[in-house]
Image 1: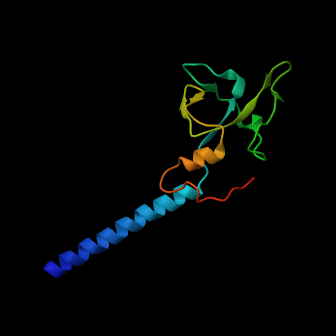
Image 2 (image 1 turned 90 degrees about the vertical axis):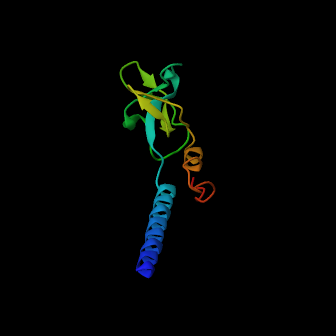
Length: 116
């Protein structure tokens, strides 16, 4: 009886450990959460105004420049990573994708390739 109980406990520990390892590996490999925001729209209490994703180019991870959004309006849109989102605004994030990945948790720092 004691041997069966001991075997059950050890298999539970192994299975639980494998779950934690799988979660850690998948978190490091995934892209951080991102929102397309207008860099010129920052408000102290709200953060950056979220704009349509089409305003941010996914081909480059650095400054996108201004894009026309209407007849006279233009937006200085860029991806904003790991932000707190509320009411159409994003705050407390970063414009640096690599920084967002580094602060992702569970040993992600320095484990990825430097893409570019």
